[in-house]
Image (tube, rainbow, N blue to C red; front, side, top):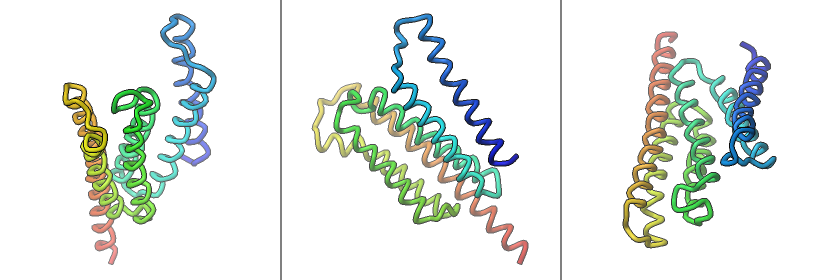
Length: 186
């Protein structure tokens, strides 16, 4: 499938997804999105989809494409969750800004790796470690009262770290598969 067809399909999927909250708003007052909410959601969804299409197109095997998909989905969920409700306290809590460091580690790692599978695996493992460290760094800085909310934040960060590790593992598999192809062709 050509890139243009993929972009058209992506745009249609995003438009359909944005129809869901729009229709829900017609039936309930609990769903109250503003125009800026729709624009932000559209930009996030379309940007995420385009990122996936562009990066996944570099991969030769399905492990690479799955790795990209998991990493891009985790990025979307991390950004959306922090914008919507925040993971540490409310979305206004400055501790949530620490998640920018998680994204920075992944982004800089991808640049350094030049999107090559083995380098991406290392970048995603570093991203997982950074994600797991965020609540502990936040606790050192802001010293919250230890309660179930803190446990929930640690569990949530562990889930995200697991997504980054899964992506890194798939990148490692993709690198091994490419290495096997290279050796077979030599």
